Length: 177
Image (cartoon, rainbow, N blue to C red):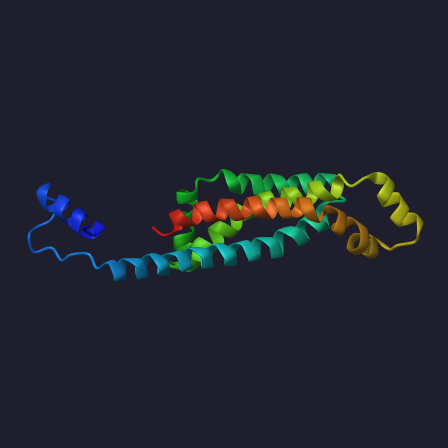
């Protein structure tokens, strides 16, 4: 049984795409390269997603009570989402130079919309009776948020985080270029 690298090299030689002196691919170095690129991919995604959560969830909590402001914030995040990913990455390079920074910023911007939308929607759609009960028992706005609203909204907020993670994983592939 022959190795994949040997079969691929033979094909490339037959097609004239490489010369006879082309070095054979080292399988071990190929797997090391794949592992290293996978770790970089996950690192980019994790950093951007953590920043998106750290910024998007508190911003959603801050603006959800003001319907007009929350619409504006979600609209701006939606506008960022409409920029093609390659264009956004290219736009970040003059600002942040080449490297991980422009990729992380672009991924962060792409993660904002699903996180913001799920946070504001989850908090607005909590049963009004539960909100009135929390108010009636004398909870402050902060206590209502911490003990009633956020725990009730958490499953929907996490759905937005999952969506943002999927978007980031897919878009991070383009950031490699």
